Image 1 (cartoon, rainbow, N blue to C red):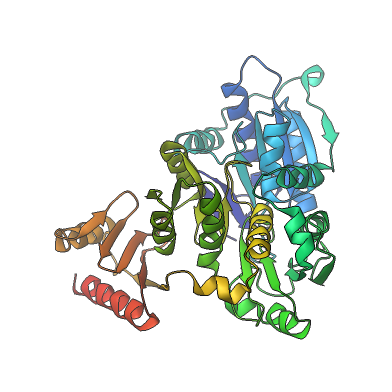
Image 2 (cartoon, rainbow, N blue to C red; image 1 turned 90 degrees about the vertical axis):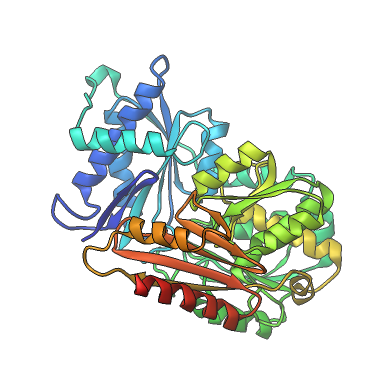
Length: 460
């Protein structure tokens, strides 16, 4: 029964003994530690925390423990119940809360769940703050209030509609053009909270022809919930069968978006952000950010529109920090995560859908035609297991020395930029492996580059 403790939250499989797994004892422990951190940071106010969850079957159990622990710690709770991750993030801002907890294991299978921890800006905790929470849990350095100082709970189930209203207010979301295009749209929401939010969003945008796959929020995922091509065969067939203009697939907490072309082919998860950024930049030129493992196509599109592109360390919190530093108007990650700070600073599949449909409607083109406009890149994803006693930091240092004459970046492992291609090496924090991502203009050249790097590591 694994339990993974990181700065961004606590993730594990349900069950196990008190020392392993995401069981009631561990849920209460880390929630109490987070509550203590919130109170220590906001000492002069009665603190309020937003709580929401995806639809996985353990969610109700976890949520009841989280809410009880927070109120038992003296914090008030606004309970959104079933809500997308970006909806919870926005609710923290709208409610002027001091934090938030999202109960979701994202794309992990049904036996997993997690506590994703937010600060008062509705953003994931920084490295420093995350370590403080982990230290509080380790030492149990918290004190619970007496009965008259307990928190209270407000049930608030309308935030998905408030989220959608905010999206409709965005200048670049063209509801009239979308409605006029009379799109037929297929969706796959893996029986989680996307099944609540996305049909409402599409209706609000004027899309009346919706082919729904797995929109019942039971938490029983009908296929692997990570939106990768090998898991999306059903919606691909549905798009072709119903002659849909586009298909959209989200993960269980709706912060990742995959797009299906009108012919049933994959638009490419790496290109979700590229397409949305192209649309945004064509109307509001500016800077962009993605992480080091994301496609170079975003850089190319940004330069085409006269902006500046910067790469951040992997992780949403790092991308958001770099976006703020560079005044980026759009950014995200190559896993289909679109961050549009005009709305809020978090990955949001709902705003991604609205902006992409606006792009599709205004262009008058098919999805396949839009996709062909972007630079063609292919990523090869690999990993290499290290021999016993081999330090991954030593391996990365030797690789850095070997490629000292190339364009390198060391903010997150080692990224080496070559002409027209790159490779990114990152060590795992939980396994004795190094992950190797290589991108090039063809699948063959990407694999060749990855194999070359792996051969060098093996020689070490």
